[in-house]
Length: 337
Image (cartoon, rainbow, N blue to C red; front, top):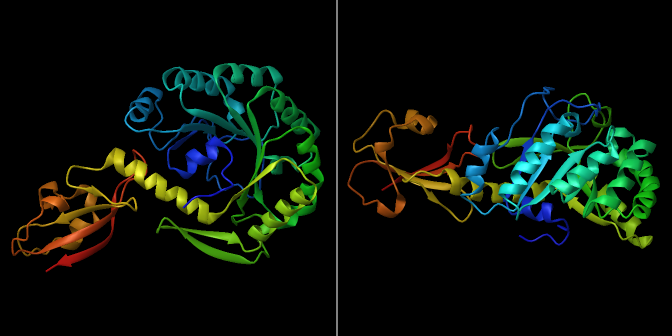
């Protein structure tokens, strides 16, 4: 599946599943009601490949990743950490595309210059966090546009905020902001915008139910039409839940390749397959399948090496673990006859 509106190299890396997001902190200096972050911890660092730069680098060297992003929380709160991590990865993986996320609330121009010199390609601003038109945030966006290769505004597409946003877009156009990334709006508990919103339910990656605003995609279309009617150069990226689902496909391929075991086969859809063959009729089938990551590996055979023996055997479809601290899990199994 190809998306013609993946303008940024970062968005392309994301859709290909060849992108690593490193959360450098979970502390933030904004108070977005739509924020899904479950906690606020300044010292917590997290990524799908761990929280140690050298360990992460080892995985990056095993697979053709295309980009790294730095996020939070607000990563400018731990600016020195962000700069040192960027410098480390840029020196060791110079071919990757690097970008960072910020609300722009407390940024110094000299910080932007140092990040540019360290190799940051793109900076993405969430202007919804500050009401869309905060003068200091807009000033930082203008500074960033003069410094970085690309500048993006990335926000949830909130229908109730349509008028606020279209008043700010002409300013972004004058600043030569490259991209406007509009996420399909997820509904979270406690968000006033969610209270009376027409809600839909989307099941992400066969396991993660997400509630979304049913008019969010229409809002994105209206914003895109507004930009086209005014001949603006800013490019609209519709980051829909369907696009995020495609991202999960790419992540399954990436993580399945990195973490699959010898008895597992990676399918074209990014799932793993293996044969469970305990060698006898067993009362422990359900236990082994529900606790697959702890099951006796001698019971499993690579599908290409399996020969029917007359004993019970099962073809397992497995969700690969999507991070070093995750577990693979059986999502479907079929008894072979």
